[in-house]
Length: 131
Image (cartoon, rainbow, N blue to C red; front, side, top):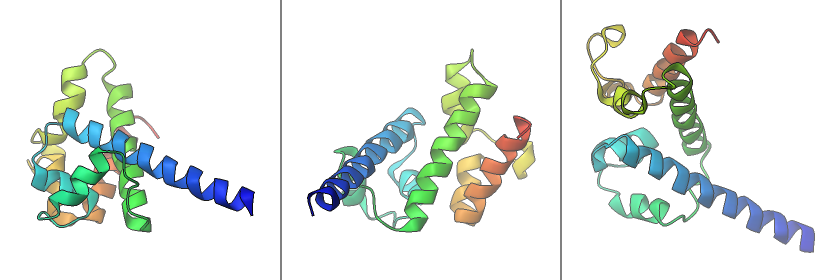
């Protein structure tokens, strides 16, 4: 039983670390509370969840949220690899209008299309990296 309990604590701690990591990223991207919520797939009015994640409380256990966090961190990784000498561009790219997205910013694409928009943005960067 001890191993099972330890695993539960570890998984919870991992989800807390993920929450802190993604909230730090969203802060670097300088996104509004509404945009942060949209990217995480939660209601714009759910500021309490954002505050909990910022404190390191475990991110939701839904598969949707796990996958969203994974894609957001993947987007950041792609940007760091594509623009290694330009940290400013890495952090403002998500909010910058892009011809590839009909002159919408990537965050607008994600807000408009939800999870599918997140996949579109991630796939665009994967292709840009030759993945």
